[in-house]
Length: 133
Image 1: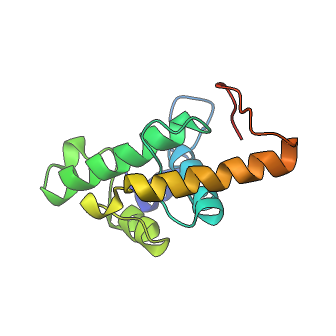
Image 2: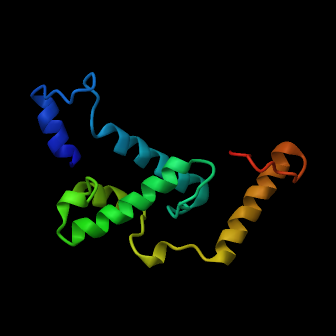
């Protein structure tokens, strides 16, 4: 459901059943996480298995799936996708199709940059397997 409809329902005191928790809030929070990711990495191509924030990788994948369903006219399975969300995502340079795939070379360069940052912070390059920034 789009934020506008959620706001309309909430403006008349609609009870969502969970202590007045807004249904739009989780989407907005993940959108903010995506904006932060873009600030750090310069793009919105979050890997599906992003170790630093696994929920973000999954959420981005769901946005792309929801977009495809929405554009195909299948609003029931569009995962809440709507024009407002599409505009929000596109406003930060979000890519919907295959153009979002990061090449192996680009991915390597990004990981190399992260390794350099890790060394600057920790003084070595022995990154633990479970390390998350």
